[in-house]
Each structure stands twice: as structure tokens, then as C-alpha cells.
Length: 413
Image (cartoon, rainbow, N blue to C red):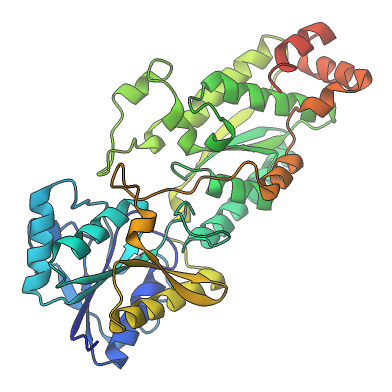
């Protein structure tokens, strides 16, 4: 298939490696005699039928950007499927610019828009999407990971390592609230690699609704267990996605909190770390235990970091494959690499047919890899109640007698 003009745009939040995709797509297009057009700020301007927020990508512009953080084209969360006029505007603008093929780069919030362009353009615009997300939650075949995740995890591990050193030096606890919505992949990945004291993710709560008290109980138990081990410090990581499962009655901020373009709660505006810190400190202080706890958000610094070699290489592979798939006449797919081979996944396999939104891949808490990560955490569990001597030590560290300690924690664990 001879392509004359190819468009590329980025949707959703930033992720390391995006510039590598843009570069690979542009360079492969140029080498094949095609003109690559980069669209600014995702679908934002196309949704308004603007055709001047774009420019032709050149070899000199993109040849060395694959190791840069951020996104040279910008990005947005504009969803053209929520408004029929926005979709019509985007298609009309793309046709006016004579775009025959489109490479989109994004996560679950972009799949619906990519699919809509493919289906509603009367076959005139072929679309493939490259999966990127620091959340690693797209429904790719295991053990595939999304572009940007490894770099975000790498940067997050560095931050947590510094916090752990500070915690040990000063004799305090840190509660880090880690970006990642609505799954816990990134939080768990950072915590396991950095050997944080414990991590708490939404997938471990099988009933769906999560209470703030449950999270505080886990952290209180970790602090007590560390005290019984003779340690007065630690770092706990919480997934910001936990807030999405609170009841509005429990956390009144949920009733008025802002939402993004997809209608999702802006969980960064819910001060989860402060709430948990205050509650845990209050619980311990009632029993005469003084603990210094500091809350810390680990978020935006992960998204625009320069990619680690894995993501830099992954990005170039995906960009190259996207152009080659379009040239072969293939469209309506998400590009993946499985067992070292480029493998397209049809859009209909990654779209939830009930909601029309992209499917998500939660952390599999029944997997062996999760059990290993969990066993490395310092959390109260059933084994802690098998030795009466150890229970007595835990009770002493908690400021309670054995009966009170068992009543408070045995049923919970």
C-alpha cells in the first residue's frame, strides 16, 4: 500500500518513550517516501476541526529525540467519542489534510477514539495504535508490558530508595501515594523492586469497596511488626487508585472532586496520604506510641523522564512496526511485540463492548509473582499468630495486651 501522508498523535498522560515512537514512525515514513504529519495535543484541535495545529516532521527534527523525555507533539485527554460533533470534526479535518493513515499513541482512554476514526471514516483513514501507559494496565497478553512503565518504575524506585534511606536515618515512616489508575501495577512494581516495607493496591480488596479504615489497619500492623523486630522506620506505598473505591459518605471530597475528560476522578486531588497518616498516628498515640509519619506523593515526576534503554528500544520497535503494518494494508489494530515478533491485536479485542471503553488488565493477585511480592512485605499475616511468644512481642510493640491485640488484628489478617 503506497501511503502519501501519515498522521501521528499522542493521547492520554505523558509516558517515557513517546518521542522514540514519534521518531521511529517519522523516519520509517520518510524512508518509504511518505510525509509524516505530527498533530499537536492529541485530538484536542482536531475535535474542533482545526487543521493548522500540526506540522510536517523532518529527519533533522526527530533523529535524536528518542532518548528525550516528554512529548514533542504534546498530548491531551480529549475523547472524540463523547460528542458526535467532535468525531465528525476530527474526521473532516483529517480528510481535509489528506491523511490516509493515522498512528495513535496512548492507553485505554484513547482506544475508543482510535476505533471511532477507523470505523466512521468510511474506510478512508486507516488507524493503528501503539500501547503506552506508565500504569501497565492495557489488556496485552502476559507478560507484555506497556511503553513507559519500565522507566516510570525505574524513576519511582530511585525515589523510594532515597525515602528508605531518609527513614532509616531519621527514624520515621513515609507513606508514599503512587500514581497509577485504576490498577496497582506501578505501585506494586516500584514497591517490590525497591523492597519497600509494604504496598497496598486496590486489587487485593476482592469486595470492590475499600474502607479507609482497612488501609490504616494494614499500615498500623506493619508499623507494629517492625517495632517488634526492633525497627522504628519504614516506607509504605499506596496506589492512588485506592481512593476511587472509597464511598462518598466516607470521603466527602469525592462528592465535589474534579474529573478528567473521560469522567474519571482526579485522584491526585484526594489527599489520601494525609488522611491515612493522621488516622494511623491517632490510633498509635492513643496507646502511647509516638511515631513520626510523613506523606509523600510520587507521581508526575515519573511521566516525562528520559526513557531507560528498554523503553527507548521498545518505542523504536513499535513505531517501525506501526508504519510497516499500515503499508501492508493492515488497520484497526494495536501493535504489540510477543515472543520477539510484531503481533497486531484487533481493536475489538481491547474494547469493552458494554462500555465502549478500553479494557483494563488488573494485577493478578492469585499469581505466583504477586505472592512472592507479598511475602517480601512486612505485614501482619496468619503466621504471626502461630507463636504465642511472638504474639506477646507484637502485643507489647502495639501498646496492648495479648487479648486486645488478637481482638484487633487476628480476624483482620
